[in-house]
Image (tube, rainbow, N blue to C red; front, side, top):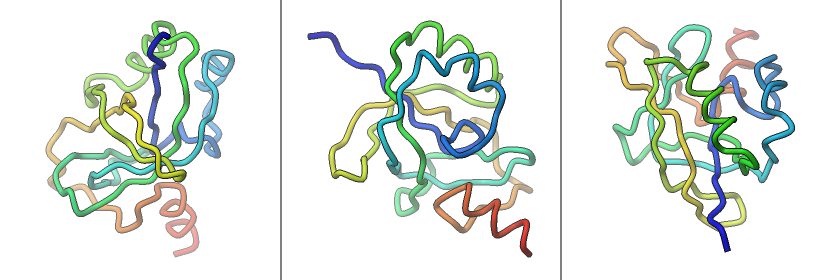
Length: 131
């Protein structure tokens, strides 16, 4: 049995975020469900960045299975650029099951960036717009 490749996304690639880039990979990914990972979340500007700095914090995101990992990861590596590093990390699904998923970690220092108090970037955006 072949190992499945999973992707955990927490920002502009989330299922309910309307990003045109997702059209390039839509036929090569399948939504599995929500999950969380131990990390801190920062507002980088037009997108968030998660950093593995505080294991007491959690970041909520979506998990997808990659049907064509080489294609999807090539597109996403280009999109994420050199501010993010892709690494496999254990993420916990809502069902309680854990999977090893690719995560794009923000690899810059967060000085001067606002720490997002919510675990969920989409909730943060909703609250930011109403404030």
